[in-house]
Each structure stands twice: as structure tokens, then as C-alpha cells.
Image (cartoon, rainbow, N blue to C red; front, top):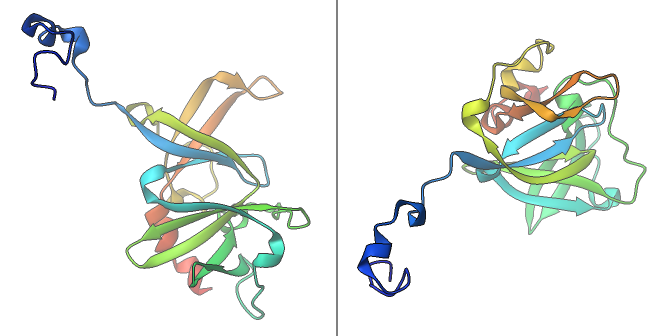
Length: 181
């Protein structure tokens, strides 16, 4: 259809106009969200299997497991471990599970699926990977799970400081030795 003369208004000359040519986007689609401490993070959309908002009663607690794990949930017949992402990253503020719904981001690598429970979703956004900066001022236990950060120029925190959006590495999270603990 693109090669047909009438696609761009009928003339062959219109097909060669540079403003009509589509370029590949520089940005990639990411899910933005907050953990309990109100830090904002992003995950690349290609690694997300599903986003689920569910009643906390659907997460079954498992006794004698890591305190990082909230429990398991049944995702279309498949058992998925769910963790409080903030605590997994070393935050001290636990996720509020006394609410009507919890947001869980199911991430997948090959046959492994893990649910990351977060405080609040902030939507899907196109973010420019070329503007990603090395992460600064983070705890050592969080650094293995971060790919970089963006400085959000248009947003500032209440104290006037710049806000940062940290990009998580979902493969590092899925393959972490913390799951064994």
C-alpha cells in the first residue's frame, strides 16, 4: 500500500517528501510507578507480562518464607510469587496491604514470572533511553537492580529539589539471589 501512488495523495512526488517519511522512535515505552517511600521507578514495557490490580485477599501468604515475599497468586492457573518491590529494593517502608486493591506488575524472563507489588501506578510513558544517566546517591543494595535514571526537568519535589525517575533492570530482579533468602 505504501508503494501505491495514491497513498500520499496521488502523486509520486508526494511520496518523496521528507516530512512524510516515518522515522523509528528514539523513545521506548515504560511503565512508571511509585513504591511505598514515594520514589518513582520505571520498567521497560517489553519485560512486563501483565499489570494486575487485585484485592489483597487474592495474595496467599506463605509461612516461613522471606519477609520480602507477600505470598503467591494464581495467574491463569500459574503460581506467581509476589514481592513488595520497595522492600525488595531495600526500602524500610512496607507496602500498605490494608487497602481495597494492590497493584502488581508481573514481569517475565523465559519461564520465570514474578509479581512486583507497588504503591501506585503512574501510567505508560515514552522515555528517551539516550537521556538515561548513571544513578547517583542510592544505597548499595539497590544498585544491582538499576540501569540508570532520568532527571525530570518539568517536575520538582516539594523542597525544590529535582525529581528522579529510576529505571529498573527486570532481568536483574528476576535472577537475584534475594529470592533464595
